[in-house]
Length: 495
Image (cartoon, rainbow, N blue to C red; front, side, top):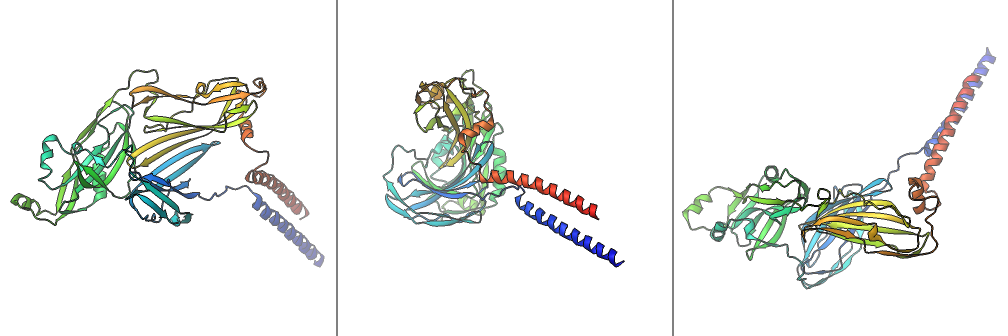
C-alpha cells in the first residue's frame, strides 16, 4: 500500500512537472503570438506662412491621422492679429491597399496692421495629448490688390429693389441666405451662407434663442434635395465684419455649405425666419415702433432666392467629367536618366469642383515605361468661405526604352472649365530624356508582374520588424502546440 502511494505521488510529481513545463512554454508562446499592433495616434500642429499680405490670413492647423479631433484646448492669441473662423477638412489616402484618413482643424487669424509679429512656442492639448510646436516670426506686408475681398456683400442678396430705400428708416438688422452664384452649370458648386447681420450703429441689443432647434427647422426647409452637400461644419456662431452698401455690419454666421446640383431642376431657397430675443437700448419716435418694441421677440425673415442650373454642352464624356475650375501640379524625382532606373512621379488635381469620385487615370499600354500606382489621396479644404477639393496620384515609373518620352501621352484629364465655359484637357508638361540600352524585352513585364513583385521595387531587402515578428510568432505557435500535444499524450500514457 505504501509502495502504491509512493508510485502515485511520484506520478503526480511528474504530472506537476509536465504541467509546469507546458505552462512555461504556453506563457512564452503567448508572448510570440501575433497580435494587432496598437499604433500611436499621429497628431501635429502646422504653422502658416511667415509672410502674408494685410488682406490675407495666417493659419494654425491641427492634423490628426486615423482619429477625429474630438477635443482640443484654446488656440493661442496672437498680437497684431484677430481670431477669425475655424475651418475643418478631411482627407483619405490609400497606401498599398490600406486606407489612411487625416483630419484637420484650422484657426484663422486676420492681421490688424502691417509689421513683424512673434508667435511664441506653445503647447496644445489635442485628444488628451500634449502637442508642442516652435514659435514663428510673421511678417505682414501691405494689402495685395489681387486678392479678392470676401468681406464685401451685395445688398441685392437681402432685399428686393423696392425695399432698398427702406433700410435707413427701419431697424438695421436683417437675416439673409446668400450665395456666391445665381446660376451654375450642372455639377458646378455654389456656396450658401445663412447669417444674421447687425449694423455697427444699431441700437437694438439682440440675443439668440433656441438656435439649435431653429437651425434644424431652417435647414429642413432650405436644403435642396437635388444637390450634393459639403457642409462646412460650423459648430459655433462665427462673428465677422462685412461691408454692405458701403456700411459696416457684423455677420453672425450660423451655417455654410457648398452644394453641387445633380440635375437641372432650379434650386429654390425659400424664405425662412430667425426668432431673436431683443432689448431696446435706443429711442424711437413714432408710436408704431414703440408698440412693436413691446414684444421681447422679433422674427427676422430672409428673402427667397433661386439658383438656375444650366445643362452642359454636348460632349462624349458629358456625364462623366468633373465640373469646375481646376489646375494640375506635378512632382518628379528627375527627368534625365538611364534605362533600368526607377523614378517617383506625383500628379495632383485640385480646384473648386467635386472631384472626390474621379477614377485613376487610364494609362495606355506601351513598351517604354512601366507605371505602378503606389497610392491615391483625396482632400477637402474649407477656408475663408471657399472650398477646394483635390486628388493626388503617386506612381512608380520603371524606364525601359531610350529616347524622349512626353508624359502628356500617358496622363490626360478632361473636365468642363466653368471659367471658360468650355471642355478643357489638363495634361502633363514633363518630358523624360532617357539614354541607354533597350530593356523592353524583359521577361517580366508590366503585363504579368504581380502585386507582390511590385512591392519589391519600392522595398529594401530587409524584413521589417513587425513582419519578422509576425512570421516568427506563427512558427513558434505551431511548435508550442505540437509540444503541448506530445507532452500531454506522454503524461496520460504514463498514468
